[in-house]
Length: 259
Length: 319
Image 1: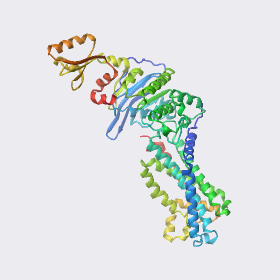
Image 2 (image 1 turned 180 degrees about the vertical axis):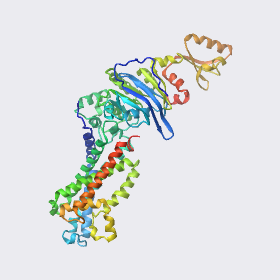
Image 3 (image 1 turned 120 degrees about the horizontal axis):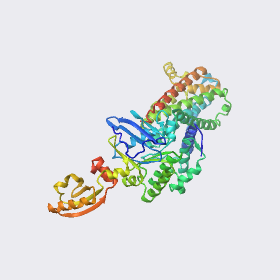
Image 4 (image 1 turned 60 degrees about the vertical axis):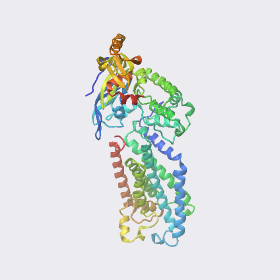
């Protein structure tokens, strides 16, 4: 027996990874296939009808980074939220409430686990969509793309943890996902450039933090974006910090965990 | 206030107390789950925590484990405050929860390895193998948790509480749903842990288990400690003998000695065997026929019933 100080959170992270890896068909392969279907259908229907970035980029190429980032975001949210709600409802959350894990341990393990799931799925989507757009293999600004993928997955992993903590039943979590996460994701410019929208909807899109994640990530591939990438980075970083702080405070108080 | 101290507990313990609970209160809405509980458990004790449903036993354990926060008062495990020094207190404590919970994603061995890891323990397979052996789970080590019977899942819960070799072990109804043979092997293992120096705190609905295992017992009722003493003292506190009498009625002069009644079945407390003859004489004098009569030494259940003062409800719970 070897006791390693502060290593509890690594086990919690390992548990989170093992949990989704054991059902990889559902957690990795299925979202990759779904994204591929999106690409095939939308690119087939819209390739010749939609012009993006003044025609500098084909619609199919434009769509790929959006789909990759959408997969990253949705799967990061799904991982932490489903893990937390399942543990709460089945009661096995007690196994991680009894050990000496701190609120930071909790946060780090759940959010990092969610980020890894999101990025693994994103890489899977990227790999299969490369067959359609091989030119995307080498992004023009890869570190920008990486920064937005990391921050976006962290934000959605944190939101998933918050949603899982807040919800007392699966129905509530589904409402959180269906009425908040999914609309914000779909209306963030995954399938279109916001410059194609009427002015009112363009303005509204600027209030959607998911838009900055998608737009910044896309900048990493093309060096083109709807808003300056530095602005997107600042907004996304601010959101990540604010949500992290909120979640850590709630975990510290034992909100919905310790009665 | 329910700070009832054992008359036989050593006055100046040489060791740090295993558990100290000091005037803990906790309210859930309109229910006062704990109304000022104070008690202390010394290292190496086998301590029983008894009480009817809703008495506050599980809430008290939850406060000790950090699952519930007390409204007032404090709790310490081996001197570590469960809030201010929660990392040390949780390392010192192993809890077998009452609810039969498990993670369906993992096998038995994975479950125990992961639980070790939460406590920062690596390479724990030798101890995990020993736990699996004592809990008769070696053959199920690689089985998924979903495939286990209820009794097996309960034993895995016991294993999870022991993976970090905690000096203080709390067992909240650990034998519920476990068959008699496995219950015996489980108790043999727990007794061994107690002999090895682990402090055991047990709540159980099987009062005969508490009587056989626990050196001291606290009884809770409505969030208060209503009795706290050695098992021996508790057994001698009330009448030493019990007469179970089946008759139409009992003599007028013996009405006060009736501890419970179920139809024509009366339970009457006697202090000594010599009290039996006056009872029989009173029955003869009042011409009361005896259908059945049995004389028993007092057991913990009768003590429990007397202290709780609500015989029928407790008897149902304890059956």
